[in-house]
Length: 621
Picture 1: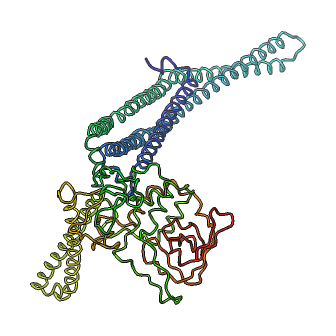
Picture 2: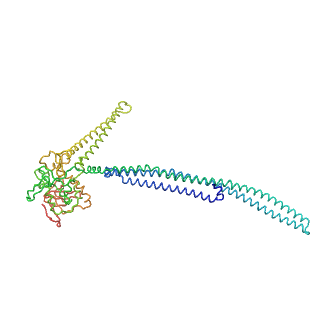
Picture 3: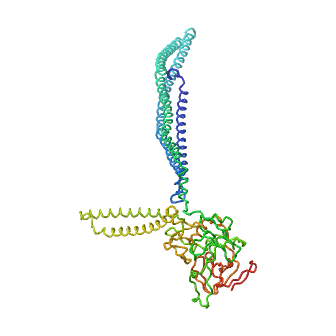
């Protein structure tokens, strides 16, 4: 089967068909190009998706990825990132192996097709020219023959006419001969041109056109084969990444199988275990004798003078004891000074005001009494945010020994700090060893450098190591103290009502000694700062949008008071301030200087002027 034989007269149709073939090839190139764009877009979206859900560095999310379920999710994100990379590989390979190659081949195909059809048109023009020559020779031969016949007829007519002279007859005869001679010449020329045309036509239809059409057929078949190869390559490029994509999916499956619920549960215990023990039973308080209430070791409060532990509201482990207490009222109760106010000075002179701590013999008001008073009084709607602002000046930053944390969490933080310091020590020791070796090299080869130039650096590194060791020893001492107090490590360090007992504590301690040990760690009675911080953390979200406590009146300071104890505020004689909470019978009045400064002052130190509309308005002098 040959186009030159079968399609010898279909030059125009073959031209259209080959152009259609090139259009099909260009359409396929466009299809593959759009596929690569889709692969790139898909890969980009997968990478963005993986990046979006990656944990942020130095954030709480990064700590959450300790759990096996979160690790499996993180592995999934990483595998999806690799999965996206394979789609980028598909796009790159299709671009280089299909689009670029086919684009170059299309240009070559267009040039080849143009050359073949140019030769075909050239052959067509040649045969058309031969045909025109044949037609011209034929018409001239026909015309000469007709003129020779007319000349012969005219000669015969003249020869038969007796009235025509002999000269006219001779002239007609010569003219007839001339015309016959021209006709013979035209006949010979026509015959020659006809033979030539027949030869050219035979060559055109049996040699030139078949050869040209055969080349066009081969070109078209090569194009078809090339499309087939490209389609096969298209599939193979997809097939090549299937094993790697399978490994990505296997990695996701493996990550899913690595999820260990028991391990995650243990991590939750390690993350949130406080180290406290559940509170003991609260013993019965006999209210039949109002002035002589019996207070047990596990009641709401005990005397500090007896050296026993006092139940704290601030600890997180005790938060569930008071689900019925209004939080603002509770905070107001807890942050007020837990000791009687000092008496007013005998003299009005500011220098004569006694502001020192109270005598250890003075008993603070029992916390149970404050609690009972609170339960019987009508609660007010207070703003925790304003309370937190008032306390923020006293709370300060996190203690260096993490004494604001529960025992177990404190132990973990201290252990982490010790490990970090040990790493830094090891790093400095490695640096010292390197400097020492360099100094030895300089000693052996003075031309390489001055050994004494390293002495300053060596001394600096040694000093850093000593500082880090002292720091590590300090944290190790705190860590040893915490580990010695944990119940699982020492039977003598049992806590009562969720707080630590002070080791070897005397039977009588003052307020400051009971709240905090010399190193600032957890003691039998935790500091109010820690309690308020815990409550501030617990309730911050719930009270973040409330308004500050409203002022219910004003007051004027009668004496200067230096607020050295926690929860108090300093005032100067003659200063005017706002009253935000009346004296509840404990001798303290809560006042505010501005939005960030508020606290308690002895009621006897101020003259209070409540608003007329305030309930129970009265003046304290």
